[in-house]
Image (cartoon, rainbow, N blue to C red; front, top):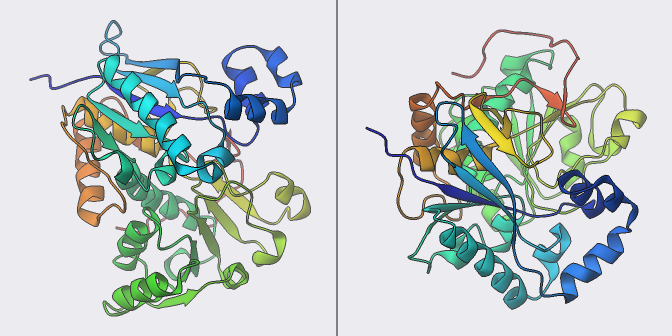
Length: 358
């Protein structure tokens, strides 16, 4: 029986608005300064824009998803007055509903701008998901991949930056059940941080807490899970030959770091291969590759899900459920992508290739 129903996914211009618009519409748009775009988006009544569509190879005549661009920059989503941001997002959700979507996913900073979708739960006309459950599940698999680039995957020291966030807390609990090495949890809120540390330490995990990035320096693998709009990770935060898994959008690493620290390996996180997906438009990834938050939205559409799903912090049970849905639709893909670094296939040779996370 076919339960498929259309969905929508909200995206937004990232840090380099000119580059994003040039990729979507015309290369000449890259010549206009980002400050001009930011001012226009802040002042003009620009509606949400449908900038892409997704279909599946097994049903090429059926529209599976709409990509809708919220007309705010990454920084504006986090720093403009809340009522203005909420109104823009409400308009985008309404556009998704009018297009026939049954569920709308929150990409990039649309999720933290709505407290993980919590400010949209009053909507009964369409389901909302922040994509964090499948993101946590895929990041766990991404951690397994990244550990293969460390000298001792079984005992590697992992630092989780943004450990108490909606993805971070779920991933931390998943890792605590599987990894035997040290876990350093890094976050800004000491109360939530220590509560999470105590929770997983009680189950036997070797867990430590810190509120400063410098404590990532002892880690073999640094996993970035924050919702900041700028690159936070610097050279002094990394030990020699450290591996970084950047699971953020906009990303918290800068390619310039690889020039100052060629010993460091940076891997893009949250990427899912969906060979059966055909996208018109661009999200800045290779063909057949999607962010995990988009993949969660697509899986909910494929399964005929009704109502809200991932709101706020995702649970381990939700992550496990999304893995079940991915297995059910494995004919289309929905598995962890091969390692990429800044959207290009990673060419560094792993130290080890044996599975270390069950």
